[in-house]
Image (cartoon, rainbow, N blue to C red; front, side):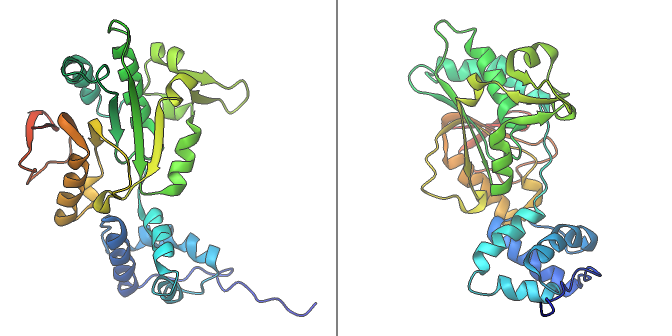
Length: 287
């Protein structure tokens, strides 16, 4: 056979120039609102170099040319996913779930959520689903305290389709489920028999969950969603102030009146919408 083309990336990974970094970051920001510091050259190289290898691009200029080409919008979504950090854990910032069980859910139930209509909790940047499943466990526990139970569901959205595919399996490792109390593990997790030991969310919860793609900065009008509680935690820190306001406004627009918005404890709403009032730490009610 005649000689086959050699992969130009097989011997050395190209280095990312600050000019190229600025271009990549700006393209990703326009797509998702996620603002990565252009100073994080090593981070950008680590996340994007794999995509260069997959496409056979010799260098970052070749990749940028693809981003500006006819299929650039589709490729820009791959770029945005590569730059998105997916850190998640069960019962992260537990004070929010304690507040929901103690005050938030009882208030919503008294207003008719779960009886007059389905009570819905939305994990707006769900990553692998730990936040969504934690909310489902808390909601199911609360439902069992109400006579006749409640009609309820949970929704998880994320900007990464790859992450959503992983989340749809509802499978977690031993390390990933360490934050779940033992009694809840017994109720809501199925354990594999082999090694490594894996855990899957029980069908009773999975049947009440929906996953969907969503860009919070440019929320698709076709996304059919009205929530009573929205988790918007540990994601605003990746947005520029203007995009933060757009993301918050978009999420709040899908909340029922009287519903709650929960943000990360390390985040603050410097300029919250006029129809939000703070009711607890990092907790707001739509009025």
